[in-house]
Image (cartoon, rainbow, N blue to C red; front, top):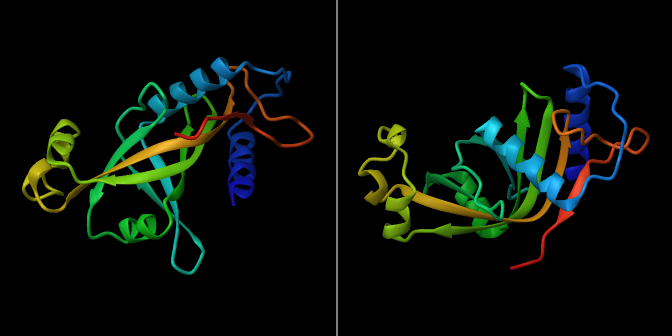
Amino acid sequence: MIDSIVKASLVALVAVGLPAMETQQPSREEIIEAGRDIMVAAAQCALITIGPDGAPQARMMDPFPPESDLSVWMATHRDTRKVAEMIAEPRVTLMYFDRDNPGYATLVGRVRLVDDVAERRSRWKEAWTDYYPGGAEGDAYLLIEFVPDRLEVVSVAHGIAAEPQAWKAAVVEFERR
């Protein structure tokens, strides 16, 4: 699944004018910095879960900015299909695309559903008031904590491109926590 997402993203980058770039091996820190920059610039991401039939299910999310370790907090209504999918299979993918500086960051990892009221209060956006009756303390509001296992990056702005013949992104593996 991830390989097809990466290939589709690279095709999209070529379509928007990805210039030919010299490939060099970026450092782990450069890949992480590029990934963070793309995540912040994109602001929104696709959350990809696995449905009960085994098919990937994607939806757009309005996440909080990434934490220093690239973990990501998101919110959802507790009665959504994605919550049931994440309970059944906590491995998910996040995909960020920076349209203005062609590049993408894909994170593969695990989620944890967080229902702690103090945490919900600390992670609230006023723009969500209409979507969650009762706000951060309401019954509908549920947090998702995503912890990455792997980061894959292609970024024109950072000079990190796919290997021309192999179509592979720069990759960082994280230690399991």
